Length: 138
Image (tube, rainbow, N blue to C red; front, side):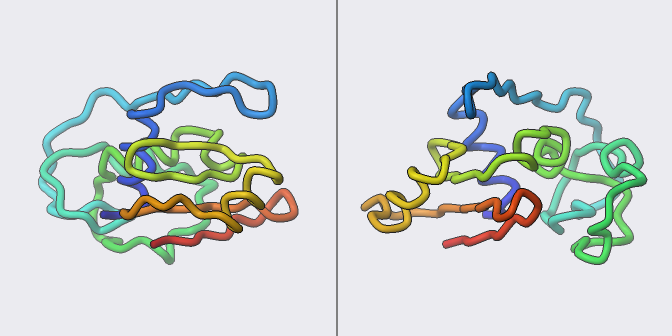
């Protein structure tokens, strides 16, 4: 499973949250359309529908060298969701198939020292120094 899909499914399963005392409401993309492209511009996932790249990828987007299908003009729903929700870029995240969390420093310490006994996929994005996201996947 692609990391963006894991985050998207976890957010759908979790719903809105409160992070550092602030309410976080996840906006889910609407208006999905059939596409001629067979892959998502960002993650390279095979798709049959998606969102126009021009509406998803803003001019300020700087990670274009990491696009998995640079000729595609379409982004999948999971990539669109991840790019359109500011909380996913502003806070550290811990995503499992059934839950999305934004752990604070003490929770990260506890999670890293005592990881959940559950098997399955997990994606961690730990924000360091207020600007750098470090991703760890399993």
